[in-house]
Length: 591
Ligand code: ADP
Image (cartoon, rainbow, N blue to C red; front, top):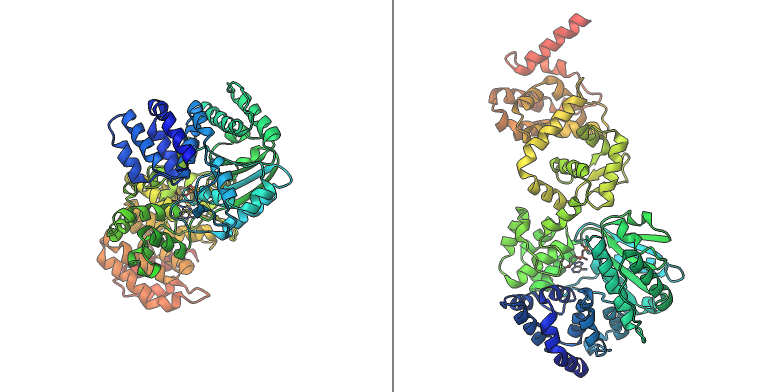
């Protein structure tokens, strides 16, 4: 820590110790990477607030300039304006030599601009994602000549914030496009009063850095705050970039609709619909590729890539490379390096609650991150989203299937699904006509875990809705919707414990004929093997299975053979024969 800063801390030590609430400040400092979780814990374990404050200052004095800057920014964020004032004059101007790497355009000038603007540092363990970083930078260059919005969107924990911070860590970009500086504001879910406080503290920070700070009283309404910010960005900080991290609500965005340059991160793609100006967007992929995922685990555990145990690959695979999950587990392994198998098991058993906060991430655990997305849905849509718990992993469904399940018009269903997609709660495969929708594995795991006790009744609903809709017989068109039902109806019945329904379906020659025609005999045989134990009718099951095995080849032929004819050559004691005979007699009588 440089001399001026140290002396300043020592001078105001008592004031600071009197007033600060260390727990709030430390959260910011962890996110800046200047405090470790261990250090935080040691301080939090002190009995009183005052003891904690003393310990924090003691620690700060042993840290470098970044610690001081981060502490200052934390004070501003937590609206300790007066205290921040005391520290302001001694803010270190340059950072230690280690940060002067200019190879990737990240010079000490960049470091200074970014730390003054409160932009978080790189996470301790970091892998580059050049394809996305470049994409964001390219959009930011479009804001060089005119104000506008760049939206970075993607699902929870996909690395949006890290990416936004990384994108501006670039000398050329700052110099050419944002010489007025880069200002970071963490938003999250908040109400109006909180929003006003945020804007106030931003205004405060901006005014503070001017040579002649104004002596305005703080704005006392949201509109006033907005006007203040408009004045500051237009007059005093022209060509600056405001980064709004984690926006949920378009009303929040409207407060920033002041003709300035904004980069925002969100799970909700369509937020900027309600504001004016040029708009650009970048979608962040939810997962890292395997190599990057492994790299994170290797860095956390201080191992070489090829020295990683076999579980490493499974962990990355299990969470589909989610940066959040891989990092959470990496951080845990760093503390407990021989728990590879244990954490892999927890991940496989969806023990999300155990995969606890161990980094700066805002949410205590992964499940809270997921839950937060669902909580903001309107009530009726939250219920519909819950219904998706019955889907199978990696299975994509057309809107029409859900239209049966929800008993809503297909157009209405499309609108709802679009909302889910926009909020990063669902994915869409738009290469396919009709579009197909699917959940990320982690989302599905989360839903299943959350609705564990209701799964049976959710599957029951699927079967019930199907039966209502297809009263006159199963779909036979062969389109996506029909494929879904023919393939998964038995599955839903089994999960709903509807053994009677399952029984009538699987021991019906009609159903066998339709399913064989649409999916081929292998799927059917599989059904008998899988659900046989539930059906508990060994003789009948072996009769149907035998029929399929014997005629498998024929059933693959097109044109599709006459199943009744084939069935008539079964032994006369077989149920298959009995049904075929009835149908043949029926045919004869109706001519
Ligand atoms: P989001 O903003 O999309 O919710 P974040 O950007 O906050 O996600 O990232 C969540 C966590 O994932 C971070 O705290 C970090 O640990 C990890 N992470 C994200 N991106 C990277 C990266 N490029 N390298 C290493 N870890 C990352």
